[in-house]
Length: 470
Image 1 (cartoon, rainbow, N blue to C red):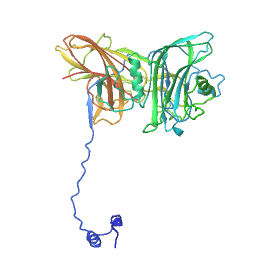
Image 2: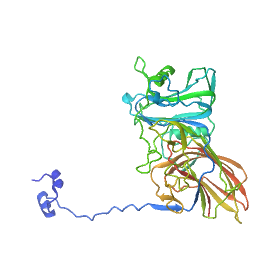
Image 3: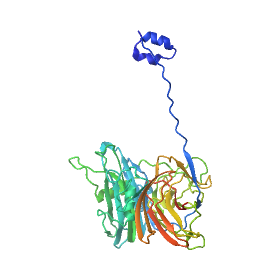
Image 4: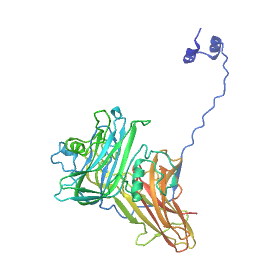
């Protein structure tokens, strides 16, 4: 007798009648229910004049430590120390900071051996014969778990006190945008001649998490009275005699700096700027980038204000454009690297940590009152616009491309000064609601100030759009 558990694996070549006779089963033929195919996504082209962003990056250097992003081998993440006397000279970029500079560090730990805690250290070194004071102007550092997990949020949320965030980097730059310095960071460091100070010594724990994956993002604004060198390093927690973990000491960090090599594994090697074929790999940043801020007044050419577009039209200013993604402007805003490791990004693609500070002096030239909307949007990435406008789609692609806080300052229709912080969570190609709507009288000029620190874990480019509503 044919066993029933093997029967259906042998169904090929056996007629339905023979099958019923062999098993005593009666088969009832049911109509096949077809699964409806998903409708093709709808492409939406929004009629907009896309303009380059006026202005340029400032000259404030940014220490950008983002490679390797996933650390499995302890070592030097980024060192601008002099290579003299170091065991691995190539791991040190010999770049001194003086005056104002910023520090950004963004790294993750994934299933380390024995679930050991990875520490991130940041060192500052005074090479001179005089004491140096380093002011810590603003500073924040957060873990992914439990401080700021990557969780889906509404496309736009009011966040007056920083209570909305979706990732550690997003939360860190949000704090700095608000002028905050976490209590764990000192207000200033006094570094004696020839000495090294510890700016940060923070853990990335994974033990006890549902998945042994965690990360830490740090953003700090600094001002030094003299030359200093900086370094970030990764070290697994040293163990006490009883096997428990402890934080590394300054001496242990210095030993790793002097004798260690680069942390690993290394990220993908980027595509050289001169390459004209093959896939474009931007690479992760590890080096010193030129520029920490971009200030601009968005006005018409040879004018003091921005004439709002015709009804139903829009003007969009490109934000954080990069090679292969200029949205038809041919403008690359990515910060140039003043010092970098050969296997890391050639430019600071994405401008993580760059403060965009933009003013829109909006002027109504129409013969009737007009309602305008101001939006930060994430269209489909293009280098040259393939359609007469910016391309979006419904439904949008699933991956979030912009997550972060935007500050808005303007006078509302009632004449009151308003300051708002809004958290945006946008998928690529998503058609979004505006951040603000205003009703402009005939001949009225009213300014809207939009500023944000470009948030880590976002993907450029974006556009700042002014649209005159129907």
